[in-house]
Amino acid sequence: MAIIRTYRMNEKNELEFREAWFQQFEDDELGQFVINHGTVGHMSKTNEVQDVNTDRADELFAGFAEACAAEGYAEIKEEDQSWVIVQYALKSANGTERDQYLDKKAKEALTGHLAWRGLGTVESSDFGNRKLNIRVLSPAPKLAVAAIKTCIREAKLDFTKMSIGVAPFAESNKLKMAHPMPPKPMSID
Image (cartoon, rainbow, N blue to C red; front, side, top):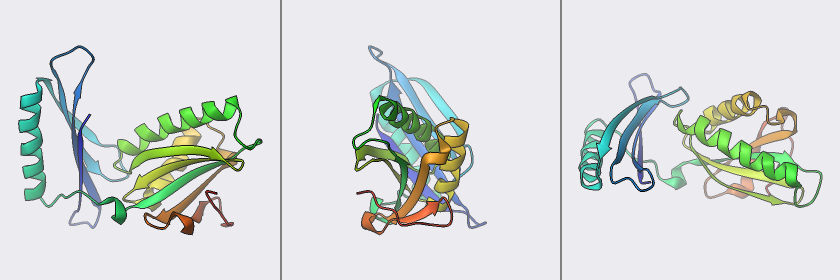
């Protein structure tokens, strides 16, 4: 599934996003073209065009990209975003079956919650040194931290064992704790 994700600052100095993707279902020739948009950090609005073939999807992508450029939207490069690391302390070195479940459920919850608010994407996760690290790439890390706390609480995913840190894209080793307060040293190693 291809996706175009763009952002701009509006006249109120709020970050807005607009994204589009084409989605086909297994064994279907036709799919849907989806446009999702809103203010970063708030639930977005969605419009769909149904029964779209791949040629029409290419046309819609081209029109979407042209409209975004005309209205001041542009893609944000990865290196201009930040890492937000959701970390859980584990009882064993490599995690248990319960921790595998936590990893799966947390990624599922965060993927949807953050995407529908333009707050970033869940990129990966790993187990190591008695920690589960879930890596989120975000254009708005402060807003993402607040949304992650809300999401994890609502999903009932052991909020009390979670820490969140933020680091520049190219310097994930410079992780600074953003939750809980007061900050303590934090590392993904």
